[in-house]
Amino acid sequence: MTIVQFEPEPAAAAEIFGERLELAREFTAHLAKWGEELGLIGPLELPRLWTRHVLNSGLVAPLLWPEATVGDIGSGAGLPGLVLAIARPDVQMVLIEPMERRVDWLTAESERLALENVTVLRARAEDVSLPRPLDQVTARAVSALSKLIPITAPLLRYGGEMLFMKGERVQAELDAAAKVIRKAHLVNTEILVLGDGLVPEVTRVFRATVD
Image (cartoon, rainbow, N blue to C red):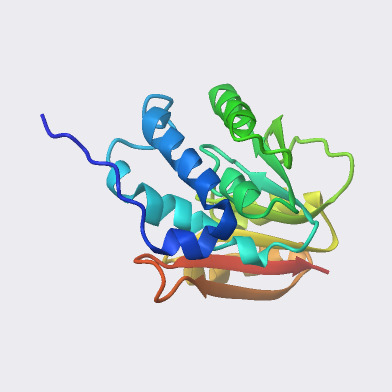
C-alpha cells in the first residue's frame, strides 16, 4: 500500500499569510486529517494541499476590499472561503454551501479556528436569502461563467465585484459568456494571473463589476 505524504509547508506560505500563518497551518492540518474522510478533498490531494489549494486560495486575499462583506459560493472545504477569512480578519465572509456535511465542516472548522468573521449558510446561491447585498462574491471550481454569473449577480450591490477562481480555459469561458455578461450589466471584466514567480501553480481570477 502506498502512503500518500502530506506536502511540507512551502516558503511562500509565510509571505501570503504573514502574521496569520499559524491559523493557516491549523486549517491545512485539519483538512489533511479529515478532508478525505469527509469527502472534501480527493485521495491524491495531500501532496499538493498547500500549493494547489491553500496558497492558491490565499493569493486572492489582497483583492478583497477593506471591511467588505464577501460571499463565497459553494464553499465546500473552505476553499477559498475559510482561507480568505483567515488571511483577512477585517472582511466578513459569508460561506454559502448547499450540502449538509460540508456546512457542518465549515461551521465546526470556523469554530475550531475561532474565526469571528465567518457566517455559514446552507443554501444554493440562487435560493439564498441575505439581509443586504454583498460587496464582493468569490467562487472556486463551481461552474462555468455562463452559469455562475446569473446566479451570483443578484447577490451583489451596485458596484459590487465578482472574483471567480478559474482554470487555464478561463478565456474560453469568458468568450462563451459574452451574452450573459451583457445581460448582467457587468463592466471592467478582466482575467488576473496571481502568484507568478511565488508559487508553482498560478491562480487565475475572473474579475468583473456590476454596473
